[in-house]
Structures are given as C-alpha cells and as structure tokens.
Length: 388
Image 1: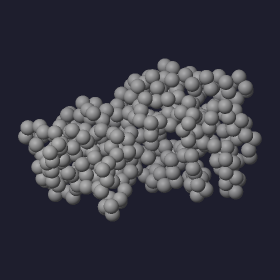
Image 2: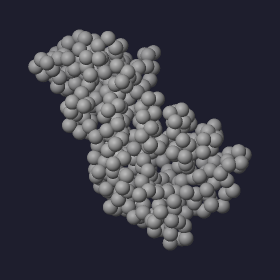
Image 3: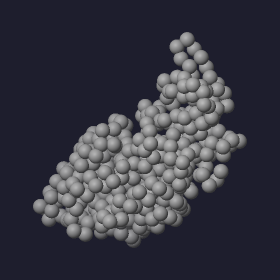
C-alpha cells in the first residue's frame, strides 16, 4: 500500500467500533485525477453522485474542489446546498420526485431536472407555473444498453423502471417545448454502476450518436447538454494496488466515440469512483467460533453498516490491522439476526482473535449512506483522517 494511504491503525485505538474512516488525502488525489482528465476537454462537467456518500465534510471537500452535485432526492439537494454547492451546479434525477422536492429544486435554481416520464414533466410545468419560474429539463432516455455488472444495479435496459423509452423521445421533447414553464436543455442517460469494461460506455456513446442524428433529422437540436451518467467502477479486490480508478480510459472512451456537436456540454455523474476507495468500515472481532466445517470471525459490524455483500453479493477486501500471525480461513460475519449477515466467505486473514481490529475496505460508497438501525442498532459514526 502506498504510504500516503496507509490506514492509521494506531489512531483507531479507543474509538468505539464499528465506525467509518475516510482518507481525505486519497479523496483529494482522486478528485485531482478527475480534474486532470477533464481540464483540457472543453465542455466536460463532473457532478458528484451524492447518493454514494453524503457525509457533510466529504461533500464540502468535493464542493470546494469545484465539482457539481448529482442528486436523486430533495434531501440530497438540501445536503448539497448545506455543503455550499450553488444551485447551478446541481442536477436532479429520480423516477418519483415529490412536489416538495420539485419546489426545492426550483427555489434553488438547479441547473436542470433529469425528467423520467411525461407525467413528471406535466407536474414540473404545473408547479413551475404556480411559482412563476421556468424549469430547465433534460430527459432521461432509456437507451436499452446493457452493462456488465450486477443485475440490481443495471439501469439502462428496456425492462428497467428508469427513463423514457427511445420511441417516445421526440414526443416528450416537443411537449416540453410547447409548455409555458419548461425549457428543454438536454438528454440524460445512465446504464448502471460498478462498470469496469469500457466497451459498455462505448456502446452508450454509439447509441447517443444515433439518437442525436435522429433528432436533428427531425429538426430538433443540437441540444445544449448531453449527460452520460456515471457508472465507472472501482477495484474492490485490490484497493491498495488500485486506489484510484482508470479515469483516463473512461473519459477517453467518450472523447473518442461520442460525437459532440459544437458548443455542446458533456456531463458526468460519478459517485463510487470518487469516494469508494477513500472509505473503510473499521470493526472489532467479538468472537472466533469453530464448528466442524467452518471457522467464523464474528465482528461487531453487520449488514446494517455495510449492506452491499447481502444486497449484491459484493466482495470487499478485509484486512486484520493488528495480527501478524499465519493466515487462516474464516467466514467473516456480523451480529445481525439474519443468515445473510456475512461480509465474506472463506476469507484469508492472519490468525484472528477477540479484540482484533479489522478493516472492510472500499466502503466509502454505499456504506454509511445505506446504514440502517435494524435490530435497533445505533448508527456508527464517521471520521475523517483529520478528526483522529
């Protein structure tokens, strides 16, 4: 592991476990890598996907770095505003925007709404009229492009709930253009998350090219904004060797294959790729349980604190931060009264005993933000490196 990103184990002593730890040096280096890739690509804008992690101090650091915010709820819009994001750097998606959330977005002057249905468009226009405001709208089009990822985080197929079908695209755009309080500004796409194969993004680029050609043939466009969503994955298996995702290949895929029109802006919504590797869930071994067939390391963190393994069958790298003993095989499990409360099967760890601190890595995204109080468990605290 690079010395810069080494977990400060000595500073963890005495802190109540479980807790989340965020390495702001790695976060800043990751943001710098993003900015380096887009600085010479005119019209490229990155909005951080707040749903990945909304720790207030993490949000503030991302805002101060100049990135925008991608929100999927009114709560995320408010959290972004509280962190200092100006309204014109916020974009807002979601299939079920409630009235108060639309009102909040309009009041904040967000850059645009990513609209996902005709019914939603009509409500936005109605509310904007009542507030005597203009709503900037970008239509989320379902491109029917598959992604090589878990089925539960694939969003761009025809059977998914997200977006507007391609064959309805022209109809909804013309409807928006006829309305009195909406302004059509762009197209939005998102095909899924934890994508590591650039071919998936290239396929999306080709589909967007087709759709733009189709619109222009009918006298629509060029549109001002193209938003390709996010989806770039991280290396869960080797977080130490690959702490920063391959942003170069990601942005180059779009630069090479997406045919932007002159003056067009290209927007990205990266979440996991920015914060995933900077966070770890720190937990303590409560017991080691030996059965005829298994050896269990029972820890005080559970699926309430990191639900990805139970929800997506995700595999996170787990490290024993204190033991230097010979490696043994464990199922690392939590205390929740559910059989799915398992972080890893057949996990190789140095011989582990009661009281050892373990780090469940790559928990910066969809860790703390998805925590629950099932079994009446308290929510763990989150600490930045500067707090310790």
